[in-house]
Image (cartoon, rainbow, N blue to C red; front, side, top):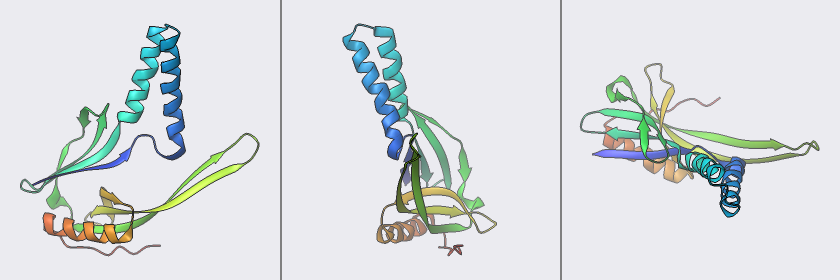
Length: 159
């Protein structure tokens, strides 16, 4: 069985605004007949919105590949052996995005994600294999990965 999980897009949170600037600039350039400038901006926007990281796991071969997918077409990454890892674990991650304005105003947003990791020989989370939005979905996915990969579940102490 092959498992393919998209982990994170290249642009997240408030940074999507920067990608939209390239889209808008490219479209405006099209209407003003500046073809090269429009193509340049739309190619950059395509890269920003089409690039993401992920992990592909082949359970029969006991291998996985953490990859980046560029333009949603080309994967870069190398295969590694699953047997180099001890098990899987669920880690809650507090994600805080903060932007500062020129007038000293701070705009922050925070959310908690639940990430499933492969545990390395030092018994620490090493390779992220899935991101979940709720603790229930995270626990369910952790149990599924434990069965699919035939690996034990580790409890990692949180500081």
